[in-house]
Length: 416
Ligand code: HAM
Image (cartoon, rainbow, N blue to C red):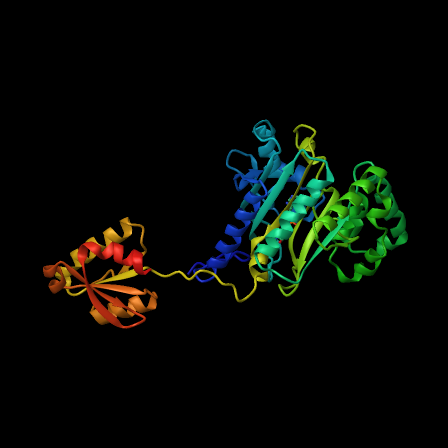
């Protein structure tokens, strides 16, 4: 037997209902806030993420499923949606058709990480982006969308962490302050951090090596190095969160593992879902659209991991039960054709009607109806056919009655 690839999973009936609930709730909330769905390809040019997500990120350096296509082109499975949505925004000049381009997408992403609970190699994101608005009220709105999604899903015990990572004007001073604060400690950090100290000191905050943490915890805070414009922007974001009644804590280490962030960054953390507690994360990326060859437009968004949202859902979730409206049983082979015709009529009328495919005893057909939790069973035998009738059994009451065949559809509709 050929097994599924490590870090991927099949989502089976019984579990998939929770996924459907998460996706349907997300679509409803996103549409309510005026976001439009967009679907982009799963394969993209590798350089979109090398440039977009960033050459110095773990995602690009270690985790991409990239390959050379037969025509020599470097292709990758997308590790995240943001660069793809920026590409689509530019390629289709979305701002010409949409007053404020606000988009969302749902789909699989791929990162070759070490699999564990809540961390997979194929995982799924709900991703939201807004292009072209610098005003901090849009930062407030995007975080409000995330917060509303969590609330509508019934997820409790979550915490919102926010931070500001500044802009290209204030970043150099902060990077210099990091390097200065590290001083001789760099040599004591892991090899990755020593490399990061040279290529992109901000990435040191991504380090997960336990021995490095005391040094990293003592490093300067981005918010203390913000320029006046970034400071004012961040203060306004905090004010809007207060206005929207969204509690948050400022988390100094929240620089996020992708290179494009400027100013606002945020994550929602949930307890009890394993070591991977971030159910969603996002932020502003004011230079990314231009960096990828588009016009000078700012952007902000977030992505939530569906696997982690599903893990964080309340156990007792009142999902609508899936069951047929009616089961059609045939007594003996000659009646099967009439039973199939009745099944056809019920289904054409939009009802969920089920049948036993292979001729079995009435007893085994009733058993199957019971397993499917059908509230009604129509029984058709030679007798019923001769009289133009159908026998109805109400499963809950174990009671039987006879109704005219031509009223069968209306009967189910009235007794669903
Ligand atoms: P990210 O923090 O890399 O951000 O991923 C967002 C969310 O995707 C995480 O909070 C987590 O729930 C989920 N996730 C990430 N990696 C995995 C994994 N290996 N297994 C399971 N779930 C995972 C981004 O991807 C940005 N594009 C978000 C964004 C949108 N920023 C601005 N706009």
